[in-house]
Length: 257
Image (cartoon, rainbow, N blue to C red; front, side, top):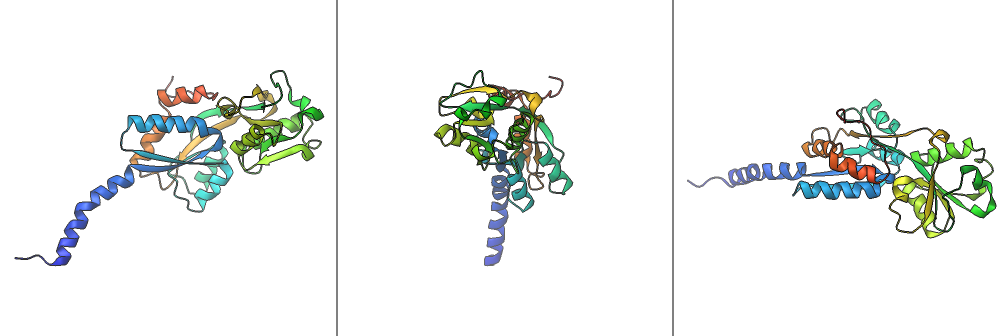
């Protein structure tokens, strides 16, 4: 007896359902702070090599802007922030799928493509020879906020206003310094260590700014995604931690290690 056409369609749909669910679970989209750009690209490359068939797309931006996008419904499964306050806000607003997990501490540096910065102190930036100074927008970029704190601690914030160039995020601030649109950048050490333009840098003393405690959190969307959970576990593993350390990040203790 011939089966009704809708029975055939139903059976076909049921047969395809597991495949579609598998496909959805084999792909995630990650929101990551711009300071992670080089390190996260390497981590994702290593992860996809170790987990063939799984796909991780990463969108980079300032942590504050990424937080706003997630709260407005952007389809991110995991949020890697440059400041632990932002994942905590996601939890407080009921938009997270778990508790924030620390993954690294970041650092800011003074970087230049045209000036030897190795012996420069923050207070020296008052000198006209340092020209324009690029920082990330402190309103929504944690590295920009720390740059502002360092400049305020050195008593320079008000006097340098006319010489500051603001990037949308720390990667754009680094690009301004690399391109010569600014002579100096107060940027993430992780970006200085893998700059496409040769330059020199010096660490900004941590005593001049609040620690850059960086955390990730699963979003509500990612909470039920096995791949999202697996990827965050991978980031806490040995290979990913080695990559983060390579880019100057200080690593939190994990599992007593």
